[in-house]
Image 1 (tube, rainbow, N blue to C red):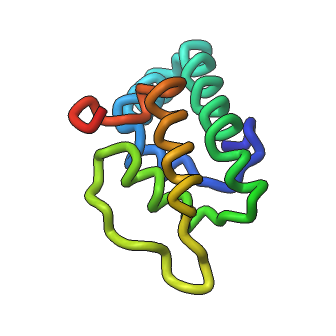
Image 2: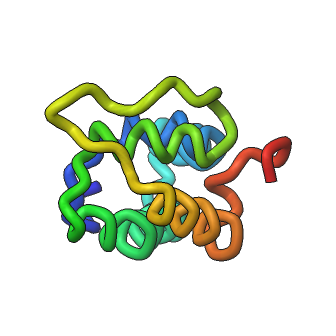
Length: 113
């Protein structure tokens, strides 16, 4: 996500927002670049608002990828990241999931909401 300046590759999006990711892919294939702008801005907002504060606390993409996948409800919990990476605290995980549910519901599976 070059626009947001965060080091998470867009491939991580498929695990938290598959519908958005696939729509972005379809629009790109069709050359409908102007139609991708609102989606890219929404994704950038998610990275800025939800992940930015967590990066500022020193969490890494390894910890955030796992936590986002679990919080999205699309993947079952598969444990904390391996050392030297630290997992999100329970408080930070709950805050992230709450923010996803309230402000970015398209990043949460309908079956887990």
